[in-house]
Length: 202
Image 1 (cartoon, rainbow, N blue to C red):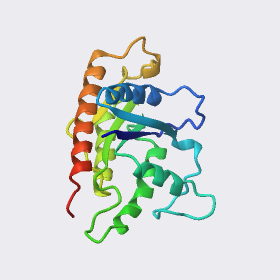
Image 2: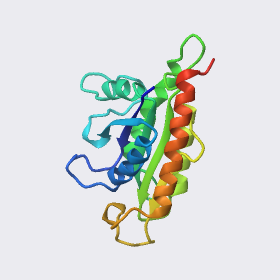
Image 3: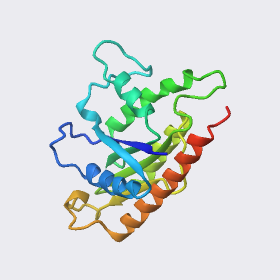
């Protein structure tokens, strides 16, 4: 059974060619997931898409969310990645969460949202305090709209206070980050496999 993962990079940088610490952290998790036969099919730079404001699954002509929504729901595991800005998740990340609010009204005959049976993990980077608060923002909102959160579901790195070194600029991945990524990946793969074989009853 091959499990599939998708990464959402919620950096403020729209260009795929722009260097991103979030991409660097996603790469750490992708490597760890591969050890559990989980295929990362791609990384979406969300800021490059025209994701309209709103709380429905389709906000009209030109809205890029419907296509991204389909892609997200076609995967077993989604890595929600992003930077810390002003001590919290980015505005891009909040836009993704706002659009998933529609899941609340899209339940099946057993009351299950489209995200039921899907596993969410987080990849967070920043040069200021806020990793735990950002994780709490991600996971509370994602749980509200039906995602399943495994034990040890977040991998993060926070640089020195008021420092200037980004995660992508490190010479090597810190040992603790590597160790955490392996735990996140193992738990996510295990949980996704269980949910694939035995869905929530509703």
